[in-house]
Amino acid sequence: MNWDTADFDWNQARAFLATAEEGSLSAAARALGVTQPTLSRQVSALEEKLGITLFERGPRMTSLTSAGLEVLDHVRAMHEAAAKLSLSASGQSQAVAGLVRIATTDTLACYHLPDMLLRLRKIAPDIEVEIRTSNKLRDLLQREADIAIRHARPSEPELIAKKVRTTSATLYASKDYLDRAGRPRDAGDLQKLKYIGVDTRDTLIQPLKQKGLALTTSNFTASADSGLAAIELARKGLGVGLFIADEVDQFPDLEIVWPDFKPFDVPIWLVTHRELHTSKRIRLMFDLISDYYSLK
Image (cartoon, rainbow, N blue to C red; front, side, top):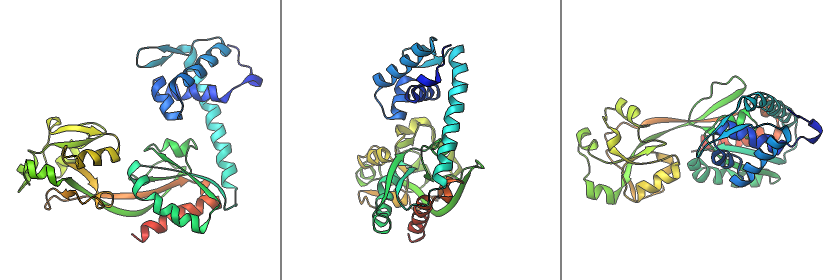
């Protein structure tokens, strides 16, 4: 294996690492925000440079060769070292200027972050913000984001978290859908309705069962891994969705399906890396988001 560090191209290494972690060229391209042909060329160029085959390519998935597994350990170690170096440098920055990356859900990005950023412009106009709509804490651990807004508390020791708000989620549907299907009078009527799944059709079955609602996959005729998409599916009358009140109150065409259904408590956690918390611009953004939720 010919590994010449003087001729090393980190873009090729990132393409290789993303493909190994995501399992396919198409998924890796989406993760890195590049086209699939570009990513494929980068992986092929790295294979040619090293003189080895890194992946066995299938129609939909790619699998690492034994040589690819060996290279993966080296590239992952390099990536982690670069992330630590970047964290250390960012943590020492005391300028109230520069870039802050925020990772959050697509609904929070659309319905919460714009108001926060308007306040930020007045306080610190030199701070630039990049928003990533992602649910992976890896964004923070790999230094792909500086702050995350999540609905679950992280367990990783290198992350610090603050619960800034507890909201609620309940069942919503469009008025048109309930006019057609009938407004439920009891839990039995709820089980006759069609539902919109989150991620997959069976994700909500167990949580709703704990609320006394026994559903099967046959109840879920549509699903979406995007909160925005799920809300739009409900607005078009495709079924009942479990949505956070803060995010659907602005849609008068959606109504609570059954007032007697006990809502879920939904915490909102603000998360950052311990080292990043010493950066003045990131601390300012962290506190601004926290203040925003304390006033809601």
